[in-house]
Length: 136
Image 1: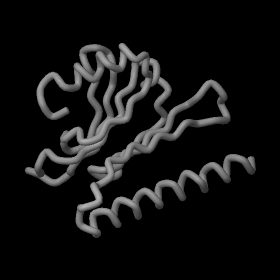
Image 2 (image 1 turned 30 degrees about the horizontal axis):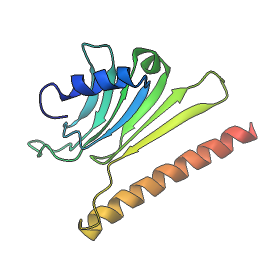
Image 3 (image 1 turned 90 degrees about the vertical axis):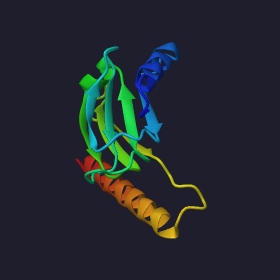
């Protein structure tokens, strides 16, 4: 998505397939933030945070205007992980999305371990949150 026009092309495909939310990997955007596209979709993204970082990796979640209104919170975890929480029609139910850009098998073991450690931590947080909500 780093090349000019790629986000617009993806937004058009989102409309064509009637998608309200779409997870994206290898976006190559830095650092992290939110962008509203001319077509109306919003993109929340997470990339490398260091100054002068290479435009590699990166994850994002693209959503329609309606879905953006339901966004409760989002968090850029790393250049490989982003999470977002949305309201649903049932006020007692939230939808949580974790978008992940996993390294290939030939990546350095440390890179893979960090990703899976972060992912396990995120999942355990969501599980605890869900268990607390069911006790109320």
